[in-house]
Length: 188
Image 1 (cartoon, rainbow, N blue to C red):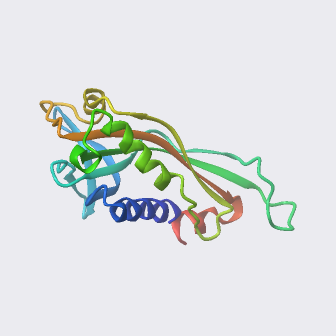
Image 2 (cartoon, one colour; image 1 turned 180 degrees about the horizontal axis):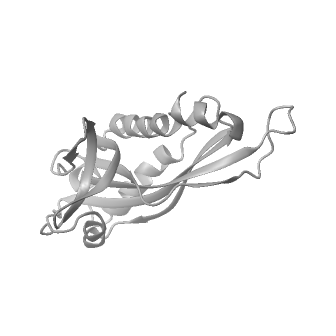
């Protein structure tokens, strides 16, 4: 599946960078009773709560809204005129907690973290049978209270000042031929 391929590549690049040693490539916000928290699906209908930000750098990616599909303005690279290209856009959010001591310990560590991650998100990603893959960063937030309130509900605020917290909003945009969308997106 193309989304899985790209997210696993991002995960591998982040872990290889040394910024994190624990990363969940595809999470969702789960609500249980009065609690909301990020969780990673482990199979068999079970999720684990993502809560281990006290390790030597950790994070996750989750969808932050609905997936959109539209006709692509890009021309097809095939000779067929009747091929319709679609742009499939996945709005995503990456949340990281990294020890400031790993980031040139300073008051600017949070912003420096973004600039260390940006080349990973700006890398060239490819997928089989896809015209193009683009990762477009739209914003980032380093306000730990704001990040906590958006990602977690029902728990006391527990972020530590020794960590840089950052939330990065970005879109993953795939341009695919409409006649092979099942094969490309779902691996059929």
